[in-house]
Image 1 (cartoon, rainbow, N blue to C red):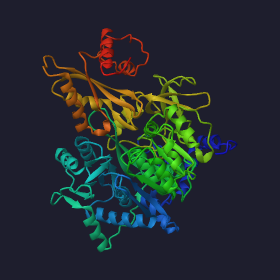
Image 2: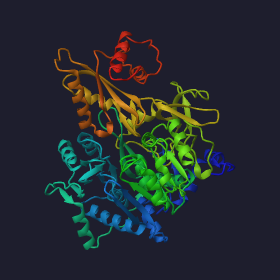
Image 3: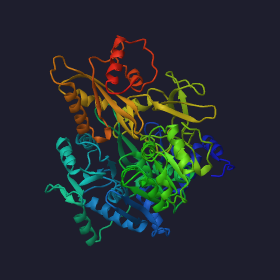
Image 4: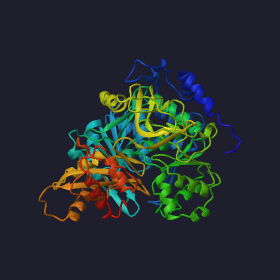
Length: 639
């Protein structure tokens, strides 16, 4: 972007501040409504109010049908690029509409209707996108579960969502290995109290799953029969405030937290973001290098690019190893992508394998304009490396599963603001971001506090948790009355730039995946030899953070510590899944605690990361911290 370009950001943000309802009413004109909203915002509805109350709409119509009707049917909607299967396929808007309307009719034949839930437990294949849009087409509520999750995690989601139908594939494919999904699904259904009435299984050539008679159905057989019978489903009108999907996020204990996304606000906010934040025009090729199991994949592989009439790349591969650290450059070059949105961990991996960027020289990136990073804090050295190698703007931005789209970023479509490494830049319209102390008083510029957002949240953000309004209030709204608690800590500088420094709770960020240390502690505590445990996130050059578990064994356990530690690592992998990246368990004689019994995880983390730390005033026995330091040195950590 020309350095002389003057950003319109401050003007647009001020416009939103002056008249929030007018701002979003204008943005809503970009959406095809069946019936316009009776109220742009109704403060009397829901927990904190609801957007586009009384409006009637269909999300799938806005993603597919309207583009076909307006002459964009031959344009590519989705490019599937899978180096792990050596496949590249492209689907036009017309072809997508055919597949989605056919699958939607199949769902109806299985008895799925408006408001019913469907769990999608699939790898990054086109059918996963068809499944999400087919649910949206008939008003069903989809819940995508990331394929890396273990059976017990899937079982919890089945019990909470109570799906009529589960859509899955025989396997996922990682470099060098096959991840069998069907046995995990079978185990999850056996564990779950709620039993889905049917499952559809996409058989991949790399793995043929065994089907259970009466419950399981071969996806391609069912699809072929529906096509032969010329079955198609039309779009079902739903209220703007009806749920589109449930996406489960990390919770420390018990029932997972099901983030709800509605239809109307989601449409309006995501459509607005594609041009104004990401600077992408209809017809251009956009790549979001995420997984549909995460919110980033929901918003920016599937929904936003299609609302906008762009072409979306879905990539089934890794940044390195499929086949090398030039994989991302190959995809950008081959498909002429104008922008990429991925996690900083991907670029740390590329930088580690090809620090001089030699592979980049093999590819033509002349179409490429902008790199967007999110999912975890982008460390300044990684941003600087990407800027140096690409000679293009690198935009860090910050948002959450709960928010559905960007809280703070650098609005490329409005004219970029100066980049500050380590900052997500500025709040987007709709987000009144404040930094407060424990008493909910705003702190001075550059002072670290809890980052909160003044209510109401904008369109696209979650209105509540699935069937848990009270938990929603308790988890997000109670601590800072009148505000949404992001559970992130940071500061705003003198220019109003937002700097997110880390989590304020026990959620750690492993390669952009938010995972609960509390959930991991439950697994460690389940080992028969473990008396007590604590899990912390320690800094990792590649993944940002990785979990480290400390265990205190029961008295009189005669077994070797190394043997028990190996079992614990395997247990976490089995219960939570490989996505936890849990590889380090350390046996200690005791854990450091306050006099009231609280484990000093923050101090343990500083010791593990080799940072300076001070003795907490409330510690019960200072000598324990030296023991922790010694144990970490034995594993090559700390200092």
